[in-house]
Structures are given as structure tokens and as C-alpha cells.
Amino acid sequence: MLVSLTVGKVDAGVAVLLTQDNRLIEFPSVLLPNNISSGSIVDITVARNHAAETANAAAFQSLQKRILNTYGVNTPSPPVLRLRNATQTSLVLEWDPIDLATASLKSLSLYRNGSKAGSIPRPLETRSTKISGLAIHSEYTFHLVLRTTAGTYQSEKLTCRTHKMTDLSGITVTPGVLDTHRKEALGAALDRIGGKMIDSVRIDTTHFVCTEGRGPLWEKAVEMNIPVVVPEWVDACESEGTIVGVRGYYLNADPKLRQLSTLHGSSHQRTTSTVSASTLANQGRPSTALQQSNEQDPSTVEPPLTPFPSGETSARPQTQTQEVESEDDEEAPPPLPPKDDSEQSDEPAQPNGDADAAPAESLEKAEEAETVETKDVESEEDAPKESTLPQHMPDGDAEPEKASPKGKGKEGEGDFNEVPL
Image (cartoon, one colour):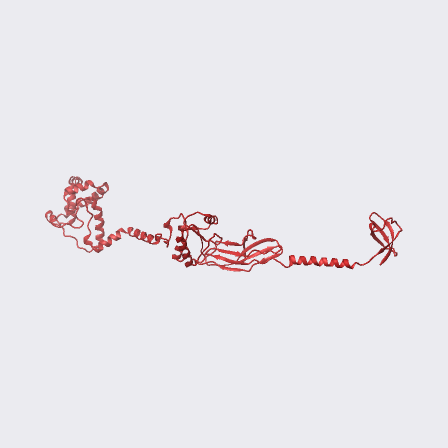
């Protein structure tokens, strides 16, 4: 197509062209021939370039396909959550590596029972987490929420339940410094209770078992705040059929705090504690044991041996024995009272009457050896007996006979007390 145009005005860079019907067209002056001025007529040929159009369309389609294959085919995948280990008060959860495709990560959060429990630190590196402080034998629901630049993705909900105290299958032990025999016995005990043994210290390790606190595994267990116990703890859990507290089974713990002995050659703590408790119980009831022995054979009860018959060292035990016998033999008839001194010396001595039948000289020696408290008690008990002695002498009662030897030993003292009366 050929078009004739008249140059109307030429400015710096732009030329004004006029059509035959007096229309204005601004045209770049650089595209016009040289030496063009106002009034010049120029011919411009206009044609469609089909080859250029085809090339441009092909380039545009190639760009669209590249964008689709890069950002439209591979998309972030929802996280896959699963249970790794469960104990009585904790759960260990793990998930597959996060697939972000071409998107960028914003956050990865853990939800418990529909509420946000917290954000996972370093989600591209961390693949597990441990939730502690849970209730025993309780059910919980968890799920992960992944937020990216390509959208938000949520994992399926995982329902977990903590173990009962009698369920020992959650025990995961990492052995430390142990001899071959103890390590084999430890593995056998774990197999019996349903636990498992692993060679490395991981997030699901519940206890670290060793006999010596050394080595890189022990250092890592201490750093991760994992309880370090002796092998006897596993045997105690097996014997009790439940989780046993680890306080008495630490490396430096007192063996007396342990609840049960082990299968590794240690002494049986439960038997020892039972024996000690029964011994203390028997020691706490001496009077009951003495009373039972007196009930079996009251006639054989005798006061303790003393250097001489009227020794004061046997006075207090005799008093205790008399009280026990009086409770057991309340209906026993009283002994016949002696009539005079000669008959009293011929009669056999009663079980608790050795101090009354002693001569006056032995009583004086015994009274000198008494303490001040004993003298005060006897002086208060003897005073009324001496005052009633003349009144009961004709009747031949036994009490005046017991008080008469003491009256002889304190004759001057008795006269001094009777003067004011």
C-alpha cells in the first residue's frame, strides 16, 4: 500500500505529515529522507510482516510453557505426621521431609486438639518433636500446618494415646558403659517387658543405662536431660509390672531408696526393708512381748539377778513385773500373813518379796546406794505406813511386817517424826 503525505513541519525528532484530507500524523523525522523540509511530499509503503508475527507467537508460547512447567506442575506437598514413640507422659512425633517445590517457606506449626501448640524451629532441618507433660492414659489429636508462598497446606489429623503405668512398651533404652553379661541381661529384660534398645541417643530415648558416667553417649544423654540409671531399674520395672521412679536408681543414688532388687547380683532391698520394719515393730512393743511371756508361764517370772538379795538395782524391774502379774493374775489368792519373825523366816520367799525378807543390815546398805529420787519416794510411802503400824499390829496384817524392817532401819528418824504427833 502506497501513501503520499505532505510534510507540514519538521521539528527536532518529530515531523508533522498531512494527508490529502487534511489529517495530521506525527512521524519520527529520523525515518524520513535527508533534506526534507516543509512542503515536501514523501511516499510511505505499508505492508504486513507475516514472518515476524509467527516468530513472536512462537516465542510467547515457549515462555508460557516454561512458566507452567516451573511453577504449575510441582507444588508444595502437605506434611505427613506419624507417631514415633509413646510413654506414660510424653509423645514423640515425626514427619517426612518438607516438600516446598518452588515455593518459599513461611512457617510450620504444630496443633494439639485444635489449638496451636507452637512453631517448629528450623522446619527444613527438624523432622521430629517431643511433647512432654501429658496426662497418663489420655488421648490427644495432632496435625501440622505448613504455610508457604504458594499457599497453606495441612496434614491429616493424628490421634495418639499415652500409655498406662503398667504398659512398659514405651521404654527405649540406650546402653552406656556395661559389661557383656549385664548388657545381655538388659536386652533380655527389655524383650520381656516389650521395651527396645537402641545404640544411639535420640529424641525418643527415655533412659540411658550404664554403670559408669563416661563416654560420648553419656555426655549427649546428660546434655539432652535424659535420666541416667543403673540396670537395676529395668529389673525393678519388670518385677513391679509398672513404671518405677528413677530417683533411687541414679548412678550416685543411695541403694536404700530402691524399691526392689535386681537380677544382676545385688541384694534384695525389699526383703531387707521388710525385715528391718518387722524388727522395729517388735522393738517398739517390749511390754507386749513381756506380757505374752508372763501369760505363758507366770510362775517362772523372777526379778533380775542382783549382787545381794535386797539390792536396789532389782527394785524397779520387780515393780514392773509385779504390775504385769497383777494384771494377769487378778483372781489369785493373797499369801498368808506371817504371825511372827520366826515363822516368817521359815516360810519360803515369794517371787517379788526378796527385798522385804532381807535383814535390817542389808536394807541399810541398799538405802545408802539409792538415788535421791528413790529416797524421796520411799519416805513418802513409808510415812503413812509407820503411823498406822500400831493400829494394825494386833490383826497380823502383811503390810506392817513389810514396813517393820524399814522402821528398824530408820528408828531414830521415826521417833523424831512421832514426837509432834
